[in-house]
Amino acid sequence: MTQDQLLDAWVDAHFDEEVRFLQELVHVPTDTPPGHNAPHAQRTTELLRAFGFEAEQYPMDPARVRSYGMQSITNLIVRRRYGQGRTIALNAHGDVVPPGEGWSHDPYGAEIVDGKMYGRATAVSKCDFASFSFAVRALESLQLPLQGTVELHFTYDEEFGGELGPGWLLEQGLTKPDLMIAAGFSYQVVTAHNGCLQLEVTVHGQMAHAAIPESGVDALQGAVQILNALYAQNALYRNITSQVPGIKHPYLNVGWIEGGTNTNVVPGRVTFKLDRRMIPEEDPTEVEATIRQVINEATARCPGVRVEIKRLLLARALKPLSGNAPLVEALQKHGREVFGEAIPALGTPLYTDVRLYAEHGIAGVIYGAGPRTVLESHAKRADERLDLEDLRRATKVVARTLKDLLLAP
Image 1 (cartoon, one colour):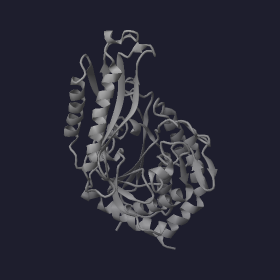
Image 2 (cartoon, rainbow, N blue to C red):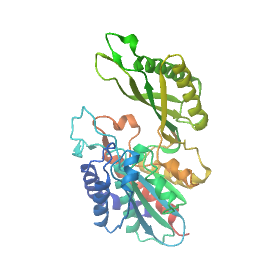
Image 3 (tube, one colour):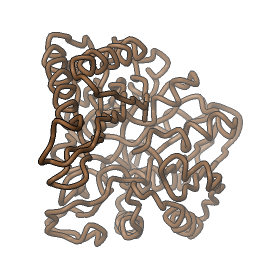
Image 4 (cartoon, rainbow, N blue to C red):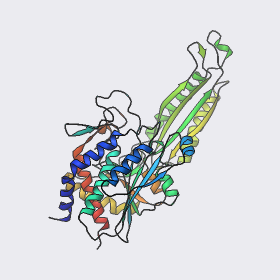
């Protein structure tokens, strides 16, 4: 048997164990918010220790975590050293959005039906806690003359921007890999992604009795003016086209709104949060300045209304990096062999933690056990699910790729 066939055979022989490992990870909730994620890191540490992997634990300062909007974060690094050579990091995040309504399966049950595992984070991205860990185990089973290091980075704040996860690990100098793979999709290698600007806009008016509304200033009417201006701006974004395959145009979404006191009271305050996705060609500073200008000009048309604008997140886009070629080539080669189809390299409209590595000069890509598309996986929707054959095959692809990159000449 070839080395690749031996790797594949090991994954097949241990696949039931890998599925159970993922089920254990899904059983521990990591809803973010509220973001009480340290217990999951502890459970992950225990599961990794069972097959000989020691995880370094980095609990974040509780006060800083609370100011961030979460409850607890413990980041994990597992270092597997094989000798002198390049270091390759594999990063997946354990935090997820809350399940929401409409589930036909227990969001934390990890139930398997017709070859698919159902549960929050099965597809994004606890599945890659499993694929990455078992790929490394498969690689080590062959006892090859490897040169270099593999690091597993399991972090817990991707939904909040990653600044206290990979961002903190990199800033503290706790890791400096040469290449990295972030959790992603089985059927494509992602080499670029959108940026994201999130703002919280608070519109202030003056409360009044609904029987005498002229004695107040309606904050909701002001908010409507501002929202209409933002949606008009959003329509213009369709005229801006990205040159990165897989990414179309910028867009804006208002995903949360709150305000008012009671039905019979003129609302004195309304707050909403907006999400502006930026294509790789855009300048984040200019994007934010334009959004603020649109909001301020709309506010000026509303006598008595004032606004406060708070930046919640600025995630820069990931632009294709030439240094990631060894990763792209190996993943495409083995993906084609294992999946029996061409694996394209393209961009995605999502944003992920991989950009934080890129900002530190580390070339990376997005690849993992996730599905063909986000829509297919039901990520951030009810009944999120993972095709277990995608998990099996992605584990093989990652194991083969690590072998190619670390095998001594």
